[in-house]
Figure 1 (tube, rainbow, N blue to C red):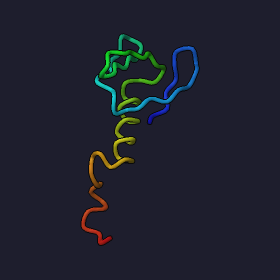
Figure 2: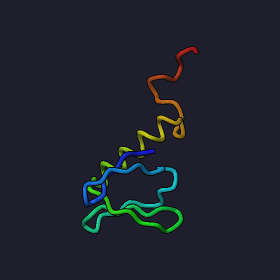
Figure 3: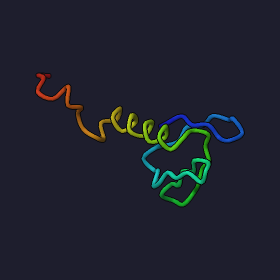
Length: 72
């Protein structure tokens, strides 16, 4: 889950797995796989970073390079 902020300032969490696209219209609009849209205060780059960090935290993107080769 990622923490985001609606335009009215209200924070909420969103399951990043369901994000299909993130666009700027100029407000950042997130479209989910079911077609639902959210407009948020965060920039597209900020949302992308949050999604990437979430994927790393649940190991969707695999191990980071600095941990490869270490013994477990």
